[in-house]
Image 1 (cartoon, rainbow, N blue to C red):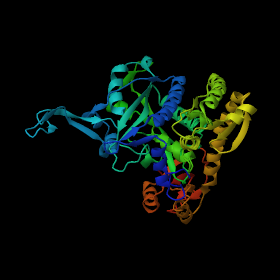
Image 2: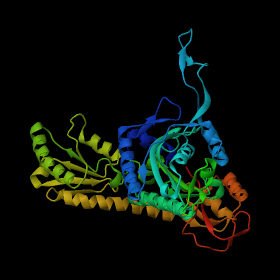
Image 3: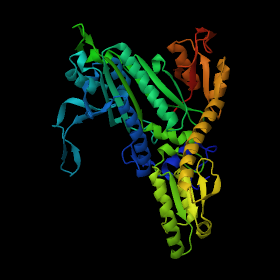
Image 4: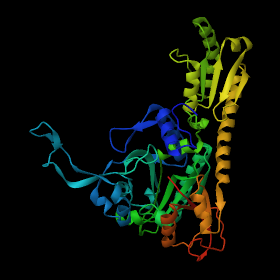
Length: 491
């Protein structure tokens, strides 16, 4: 266990907070419930953002930007949408400050807005009011827009990355001429999220549909990917929504079809946020700190020289220059830490804490033998490798580490994925220290769903796409059921 980090077994929640703080990812700010994302944490987010952005653009999407402020009247146009977000909205009521006779800064009561503005919790309403001006004919469709932005949801209980009043995200908003096209878009984007989670985050996920009570406000269907954290709880790691024509009807967005008839537009929206940072930490990290999949690591390789004097350092640095040049030529990011402010042991612990996938140490004896000491972060295995050909070796090793991290997470998930037929079995699993995912029959009613949530704190995470039709009885009500759904406690 790294100094200053609580062990997972002792206190999982504190372990998470310790890693976020000690690894320099984020910290609480002076604004209640909001965070400062520090450079190292933001560097990881940038890697996520850049890869997702590439995947979006490869499927024909373009980036745009829409206003932070949304007129209150826009929210009232879609009833279920406003109901879904009413308790989380921050509202701007005035536009000016002034100084009173005590030299205090106060709100100028004469500067009240004619209409209050909502600080966006999501952008469907402002975007569909804009799309009304963009869409007249089927020739204007589809519109495939994404925006990278911040949103505000006024959370009462906050936790760095997982739940903050302000967070970063992307939100896609698309408009289509047919229902089938919008539904295909909804599924396509969920598949992109799943591919990113598994191939870049090394995090296996379950894909499925949300129950009606868990859907996004204003959606006809919500699809999600659900990942298991090391404590057996679920974390919703991406959602994609089929909005039908709800927002088009609310904002009167019609188009002239090929037959010359007016129709309402069909829509989707989809998003992931900085919650993915929390998922990355909780899916892979250990008691020494972060364990980062190489594809998302800001630094792939750190090299630490072991020396007693400047002459030794100079010789080591000459050899390291050759190694770093070879690594960078292969697109491998490398840091040479020759800073003499800290001893090698401190540096080793620091880079373990930050999750750097590969660490090299080179001393005078290594130079004589043409060797380097290599430690891989995922297993902490130590080996001696030749400097000659080291770039090729590390290139393959990074691929192996990426796959190994995924396989470890998959095996953990599969070991805690249970199929049960009784309510007592479900309660025993979700209330155990190790938690887990439970596949069980449900009668499809919101009443049963609410009772199970109330009594166990477990929710229906999704109705998995790969869950086959299967006659059974609901574990709670005993009523008939046609398939199993996925229950778990969640973040």
